Image (cartoon, rainbow, N blue to C red; front, side):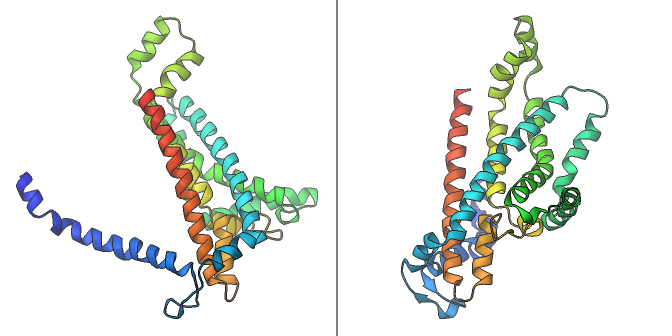
Length: 280
């Protein structure tokens, strides 16, 4: 059986490999090259060296979007994981209606980002209008509106992953801890959390990448207003590439920088979390 698998391995891998090359590797390499060019189409690219990257770091909008994205991501990552973990603890106690609540909390994740953004825009502005303001009057309203939206959408999804991890913790270990007189607090931090570090690694990675890459919710909720103060990095790249004539190369350079930032943060987080898994 293994000989047959090895014999036809290339036949089965080739279609997927070709699709991966066409859909990811080739566009990525071309995009990296185009970040060093002035162009309007792929066929008329003129190499300009580091000029686009210099313009990126001279752009106040990009630096503003970077700071805004980092601040938003820190708040979103912390709040989503805390609330999701708290819900997972409550919904693994075995009380009646648990499956209903799990489904109810997970459902917001099924709604598309654009639709979700417009829904929350209407609701938040409806509340703020009672006080004579809207989200576009001050960046802080847009910031917290995005945080609330992100939490509402992702908490249920992250909760399901935590629940799966908690259900894999052996009841015998919990029972032994109770017999030894361990409090609920010690049981949580000395047994449960160390044993679900693989779930924590996944949840942190998902919340980090999704927070940094947020685009459609940002576009629908605030569109970057007021004065691009709530534009996240993905939206700023979109506005540069499609909204400014002759800035396609600058937008591509921003995209490359954005990729490197998210990749570096994601890889660092996974490496640190994996180290905790080994120690546990």
